[in-house]
Length: 111
Length: 115
Image (cartoon, rainbow over all chains, first blue to last red; front, top):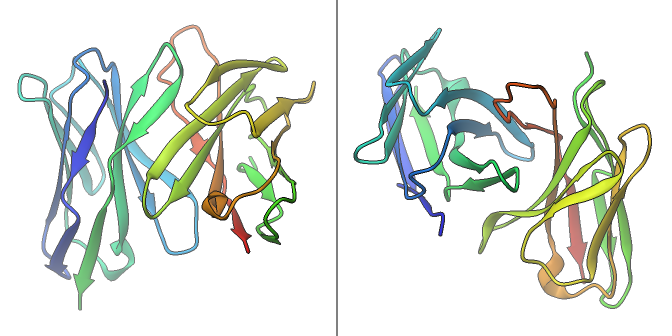
């Protein structure tokens, strides 16, 4: 079955880079996503990557995909206090159109 | 373009009651999915609607149901509420295209508290 795992917590200093890691088990996953959730809010889609890509860059965000190891990472450059939130990685079951989410990584940015 | 909207934002209900939550998708989006978020179980898929039909369903009891209207708006209903149904219920909409990337855009959620 599908399973997505993430570390629970990451603390960085403002201006540093943050790297949030995720592993997934479904080798047939076609798309993988990163979402951000701030307190009391819904999920904001940050970026996604197609499984035939190794890397995708979008402004301060860089997604790396190692399909062999089923490892996904999100790098946030020049991390700001406004980046403090919970970050979820997710894979899609295209047959059911259902996202399977990791447990989320809480990013704390110290000023 | 307006995002996904959900009403109400907060609800308090008593065990045994039923509740209806509403979701309006992004204009032009015809697929609507529902997810439950709890501290213990995380984010779990409830069901997905497209063209007024439930197309996919997660592993939830029959007390959880939904429907979609011709304007793509969707409602979900939970009957005979239990304490464990307390959660944030998130609605997401998706644009169906011939080359989909299956992106789902979420609303702010409805926080349901069952007492």
